[in-house]
Image (cartoon, rainbow, N blue to C red):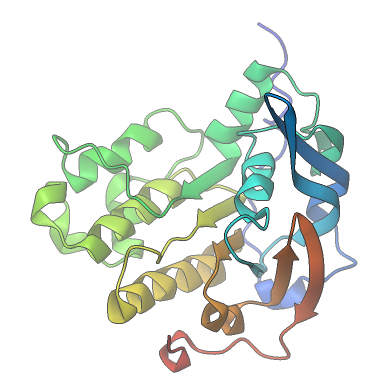
Length: 256
């Protein structure tokens, strides 16, 4: 078997307050373009993206549908590759990596949270999380991950016995159980009402602060931007602006 290029990049618990641009980035995105070809038509999903993300920070990627947010997240997560440009995770280059290397990268270093929970209906909350912990290196116990998201009393409940917010929290527990260095969240509150959405955002904030995981939240909801360390506004496949919040706003103060 060949060398696993991702094994030397391990999770470290770092106080987010100590991290700032100038420290070693988790991601470096350099001149990235993504073009999809649909018959005679070329769709430019990303145009000349340059970006760095850092350990311990919580970043909100904000923009309307079609602005390129999800395409960028998929490239960072190793689910897609750029048409041109380079993407580095630590000192390893993702762009041009083999399919096997990207699979190992996703398995051991990235946690994904999507708008829809993708839980297996026939498995309990504990068993859904165990699907990840059984294949990841240095994983938490399922019970630990579910305690982190406040579901210690729902371990043996099936998805049909859980509310939408509880199902999303199981999905977050599943994502963080592998102790990822990166947590990528695509519209995690998109299918939830205000109070349930706040509950999920509180969990993501707690995970970010307690584990030092670099967390990126994609949303079209401008109100969520206030909870981030930085806000990256995207438009028409480009980064329109990058702003740093002087202070992260409490989730309790967010309204939409």
